[in-house]
Amino acid sequence: MKGLYWTGLVLTSMALSACGGGSSSSQTSPVPPVTPVTPSPSITVTSGNISRVQALNTSVRIEVMAQASNFTPSGTLYASASDGDGLMRAPVGVSSDSKGNYTFAIDTQATKESGHYAGKLTIKLCSDEACNTAQAVPSISLPYDIIVHSANSAWPGDQLTALTPWSGVPDWATFQGNNAHTGYVPVEIKPDQIQLRWKRGPINNSSIGPSATISPLVTSNGRYFAGNDKKLSAYQESDGKLLWSYDTSGLRNPGTNPPAIDHGVVYFAAGQQDTTYMIALDAADGSTRMKSAMSSQWEHYLSPIVQDGAIYTNSGSYGGLYAFAGTGDRLFFQTLPQTSMWSPASDGRSIFVYTGDALTVFQPKTGTVLATIRDLSFSTYGSQVGGAPVVGANGGVYAAAYANGYMGSTETGNMLMRFDTVKGFLDWRVPGTYRVTPAYADGVLYVPNANPYRLEARSEADGKLLWSWVPPLSNEISFYASPVVTKNLLFISTNTNTYALDLKTRKVVWSYPAPGYLAISASGLLYIQSPDALVAVNLK
Image (cartoon, rainbow, N blue to C red; front, side):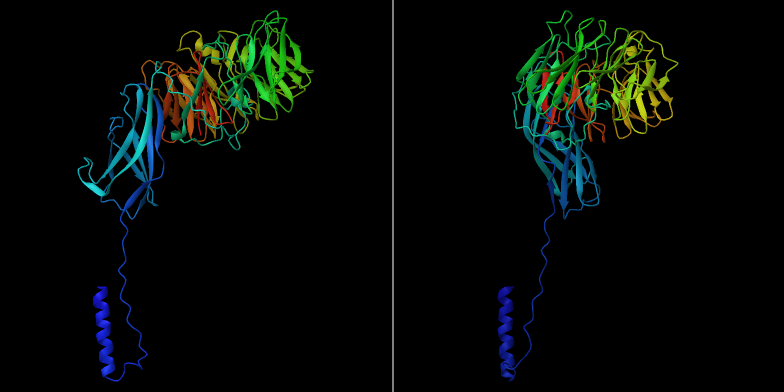
């Protein structure tokens, strides 16, 4: 075309010259029309490579995000998945928005043997459900790397990547992370960034049940701290290396209870009977900051809490709440019903203690009782609570007589309750068998229930069931410990596996074959603390 155009221009000029108008013409040469080039339709994967761990005999949901350019599907867009290992299920869920963003939802097979699977996932794009007719973009592909792990699988090797603090994420400082015991960590986690980091031997001999010595760890400044039978120890988060230990064997009745940490000081109750103390240790080197006597019998306690420099803990020969200043001076002791295995809670203004029969509200530092809200329907099968109250919004405090869920028949159960601390009454009850402290975030309580066996998401306003999830395996018969919740994922442990559940889709996106107490540190590590081992998992 270019050659023909210039030939025509020369002939036209000669004709004009012959007419005497060649050199004096003011006319401009015509501009040929530009034919627009239409870019080819394309779809680009934006979610990155697939990298997961899944427990044997379970499945995980994978969502592949993609951005379309100059692509309009012919009719309905269908999709089918395939890979060299036969790891993915063929049907693919497809959703899109008005901006050309597509989400392809794929489930892995639950029947694959344990092992390491890596290759390329191909998502075929079709205009019919049988996937016989291709779309203008026939397929997209991306790499996958998936470990199917059984309880008997060899450890795949440590991944000791550099650790950096999460911005805006607090320390996991006490039972269920914070003084409100919500188990909430304000982060969004990408499932493909969840990677096994290291595995070490158990840090204590914890077990489940109402008589358990629950000793979940706490974290701060790149370290984690945990008690075992007679020692409180500090470890390095990066590799699990032991840094120091404090031994209580010198006490006539030695023992350690779970710790709390605040401003570089670790606090824990130690000993029993007439050699019981609240002990404070320097988190850096384990040196003693204070050691204050308490009364007790043979009970075990959950972690203390620290608020405005004051330490609050369960103790007392016949039950009660102690408060100490950071210097070790006793601020007060208030007698309560003789129950153990609980942790006080706080909303920053008041201290809350749940003893099964009632929720008692205390004024900080003075110990003045501000309110006692009783549960007149309560009956006890033992002298342990086995959990803590959870502080929600609008004065709501939530609790259940957790240990009662282990006593008698499962059908006997207990009640999940909301105490209205503003108006001073027990607001609502929900029957079930609630054995562990729930997690809480944004108006929703995430509550493991043993009967019916399921995880329940309940509205804090009225206790209404919003949705539920049932663990997939027939040998999963109980929940091991309290769940942990983030902005987009819920981590929950059964007697067999630990799962990461997407809060939007309510599908499992990651799983590991071990039960345990769960914690998430400001360094971006998930801890699974089982009787057999401690596993650290990279979350970022």
